[in-house]
Image 1: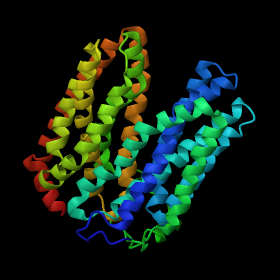
Image 2 (image 1 turned 90 degrees about the vertical axis):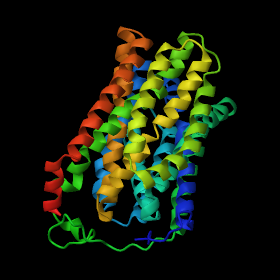
Image 3 (image 1 turned 45 degrees about the horizontal axis):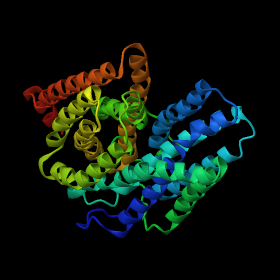
Image 4 (image 1 turned 120 degrees about the vertical axis):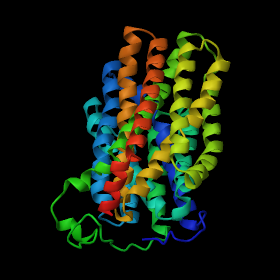
Length: 408
């Protein structure tokens, strides 16, 4: 394992992984708006196109525990290289699909390797972050995804106007393949570690041949973090899936500016919020996060002009800073030999929340209105804040403190 005890955050390995994440996220972002249209162009109905799009999220959700199992046992550098290469190959396969039914298994494969590569990439990245700057480092690790998802879709749409779907998929896949192969240049000293939960002194490599345990799949102590991540991610899913439709229904022009403002504020806020987590603790970011995201949801539901939506973009960007704070807390609360599991628990919450937001958002909007949907999300954030405050009170109760002391 790379020695992260050094005080320097911007070491060569950390910067290298940021670049790899940026390429991977940008290439993935290119494919996001293209897949539904490509499926329809092959003769499918919108319902089938939705199913093809949705199966990716389901397979990604399955891929998170799989990443946790293998990520803490194998060399993460080699695993990342393999996962990225398979990721790129699966995107190229879209262009070779001989028929509609082939797209389903291709999407399943893509979702699995995408989940594994993303989870392992973040876990590997934390190995290069000094412990005292973990919050700041985790915040920066997510920058590649923010930038990639901000510009990747636009790049994909612009390329599609000049070329074809197949050309775009091949280009995106080749970019991911190149990023995967470039990981070979990353300096990483892998040393199998003994997990404090193995109970038999086995190292991570030695546990490969042992039986699978529940603790290899689920970190019970991180379940509350997964739950609170899912609540916040519902808002994330609602914005990404339905904001453009809301703007169209209400004749709000230039809605793309929302995403530019949101991404810009996220990029500016990440370093500050990360340092705040390192110096003060996650509570100082998570509590305001629920408040800000809740306010953004309510404002979106009531907006019929662009400027309130831009204000909501700022509030949401600052509020979603609670997500990397929870991610940092996941990493801190588990032994370094279980970092992939820590990332997996966080991403399971993200995938679950985003999927729930997409599904429930569609149901609520069809039955009622966009206003009801986003107001419901605001209420959910308020409930999430109340539950989080109760959870923190429970952790700080004398009974729990005395129990924790006796266990230590």
